[in-house]
Length: 246
Image: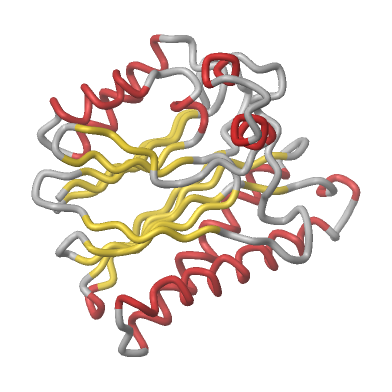
């Protein structure tokens, strides 16, 4: 198992409002990963993403390192951590007009050394599982475009260039309560888990992401090659990538 992450402000944005954290919890023999894509004026989005990623990881780490935890308990712990992160972001958003509207997506994972674990997401930052050279999106986007797709109002091709592609329907910090989704994962030998902000998924097609993950021998190599691809395409948004490779 090896894990690595990278973040970049991209080619056009003046600042980076994405954040990520990777933490090994030796007592529970697992890795805790969190990636956030902030939104809000001035530095509010960056603050929301940093606070939320830290609050989520700290809560999970404290629980798993303090209490014996079965795999079946992971979703509960992760949902509690998500509530904690949302509460922190929401509280900060009340401190002044300059922080009004701050919020962030969250995609996170807790993975045991044997590849078993869970993914959680709020918003449109994504989790992908590469298994036997095939890439599958684990998370479900909480976005207007996803709702239109599920309702059959637009096609997948129309979704790629929809004018409201970046409108999300859930975020941490936008309300006092938030609903997250959780998904069980099992990574076999050679499998990868990819977490990414939409700065990658909006600009690099899934077939190219698949090729990079298949060709990369390490998590670091995969992150660097994916980042290079995103930047070479103009990277109009912040780009953040985390890869856990078994």
